[in-house]
Image (cartoon, rainbow, N blue to C red; front, side, top):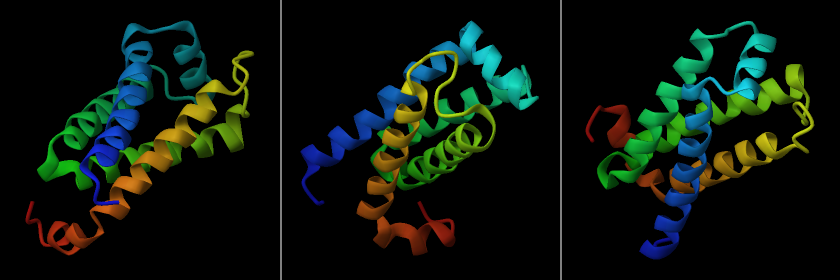
Length: 129
């Protein structure tokens, strides 16, 4: 897991998915509005989660803050996955489960990034980036 190329591929996978879904949240796409209305948090939940995803994306790309961004992305994706499982269903508006699969891929990417930076967790707990 110390191969820099593999780590960058994992980082870019998470960031591309986060930024791609972010576009739909900020543009008020019908599917995003539907999801957050179903969850009962439209528009604040949609915009708020979009801001969190943007911050996570930026932090993941900065080597010094990758762990923090991955943890933020991990939490956000756990929320998305739980929302799918318990409220929305795997398939939302006939998307074939695409959003759920993207959330799982992003979750796994963030988990791998956290694992790769696990030696930095004590520093994070002491607020040393």
